[in-house]
Image (tube, rainbow, N blue to C red; front, top):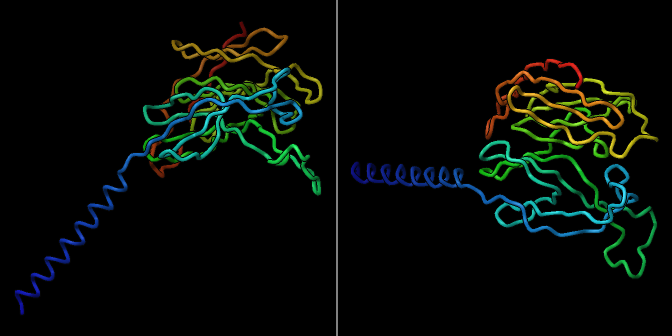
Length: 247
C-alpha cells in the first residue's frame, strides 16, 4: 500500500509539473503583431473638424492585426520605439447620426465618419497596446515627430489660448519640454499652426516651426528610456530640457 501511495504521489507531482510547464510555455508564446494593407475611406472637414486638412477628402487607414485579428484601425506611419515596441496613430469610426435621424436609402451602413484619434503604443511580443496620454496634445494641431522614445509637437493648453512647444517621453509622467510659443486663437489660426518639428542627434536638439515666426530650438538633456516593457514598474520623470536661443 505504501508503494502504491508513493507511486500515486509521484504521478500527481508529474501531472502538476507538466501542467505548469505547459502553462509557462503558453505564457511565453509570442504573438504576431503588424499592420495590414492600406485602404482609403471617405474623409472630410465636416466629419473630423479637429483633424482633417484643407482639401483632404480621403484617409489612408490600415488595420492593427494581432494574431491575424483586427484589433484597431490606424493611420499614418508607425515608429519603432524599441526592437519590440512601436507607436502608431489610431483612427476611429464614429456614429454621426443625430437622435432620431434615419439614414438615407442609399446609405445602408448608417451615418458614420472617420476621425483621427490618439497614438497607440504596441508591444509586438505580448500583443498588448495602450493609448498614449501626450501632454497638451490636440488632434487638430499636434503633428508628432518621433525620435527614439521622444515625441515632439506643438500642443495647445487646456484653456485653448496658448500654443506650446512640447517634447513628451513615452511612459514618463511629465513632459520633457513645455515652452510657450505664442498665443492661440481656436477660431482663427493657421492650418496647421506649426510645421513638423525637426530632430538633431548630437547634441540632442529639437527645432519647432510655428507658422509666421522664426524657428525655435531647444537642447534636450538626454535621459534613460523610461519605457519598461512587460513590467508593472512605475514610470520615472525624465530630466528637464535646456533652452537654446531661437534660430
